[in-house]
Image (cartoon, rainbow, N blue to C red; front, side, top):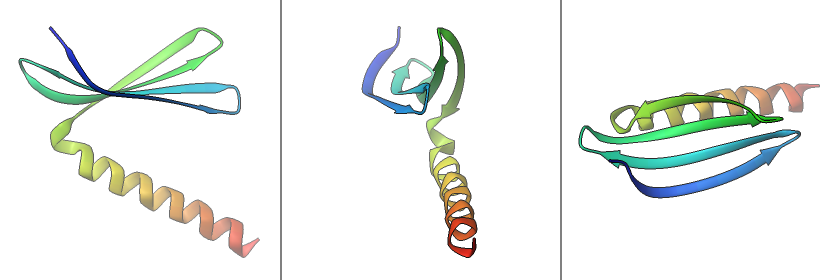
Length: 71
């Protein structure tokens, strides 16, 4: 059985993203669900990889910001 620890929802353009931090007998994980017009896709990141995941997202955000600033 899964226990919900944290749930957040954000909307970007016409997409909704759901971030659910959960725990089950196998451990904690982050489930990210994208909803576009009722179609949903989900990825699951084990809690052991969250720091690496956030670091990679930060690098992508910085690269995008650098491109905006250089334009």
